[in-house]
Length: 263
Ligand SMILES: NS(=O)(=O)c1c(F)c(F)c(S(=O)(=O)CCO)c(N[C@H]2CCCc3ccccc32)c1F
Ligand SMILES: [Zn+2]
Image (cartoon, rainbow, N blue to C red; front, side, top):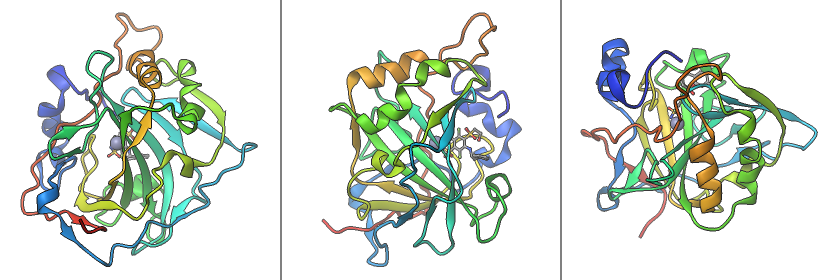
């Protein structure tokens, strides 16, 4: 992406100068206020197809200067949305080793340690994620809140390679695994609202599904993520550590957040 950052002169309060949608409506992330949720019985459990990738497939794990991204094959898709939404990539947002709060969405003001986003695009209507990214029905992102607790062996499929992608534009090939294992057990309990990309260009093109149940990773796993990665190229001086790569919560305006569960 461009030269936008999360802090400093190119930080989020300046994004709208170069990326006008960032100053627009339907922005993400937001604070989920559970007292204001509207239960919608038509919100069925999320159905995922072909998430169980085999170990002899390879995926590209990369550092694009803004996040750690894992490329995903288009054969993975969500099957019970208004269109088929095929997987493109997953990436992470996290805090820092001194301040382990870095989720983008918050729940009743609570910010979690980190957040994972699985980006899908409407493959019924568009040939790829870049063509879909600025269309109102273009993207569907699954959000998973991450808290610090038990060691997460599924997450280690990614974190064990973290030292191979320390610098911007580093990429490594990793063995694929069951991407479903990164998600919470309960795919039937989630928040749903219309929002945007949380990075420039901030297109209001995302159907957000944020699972109610957080997953946990261990403190050691979190520290590895929070301390191993740089936004700068390997030869750049000084090195710029990548942490706290989250956008602050945006106004909900007149949007109503739906939920798939009661109580
Ligand atoms: N939080 S978020 O909104 O889900 C989110 C990010 F946070 C994030 F950093 C990225 S990025 O790494 O591509 C940085 C630049 O957009 C994306 N990219 C998406 C949307 C933009 C177009 C595009 C094209 C190909 C692949 C992925 C994407 C993103 F969607
Ligand atoms: Zn994201």
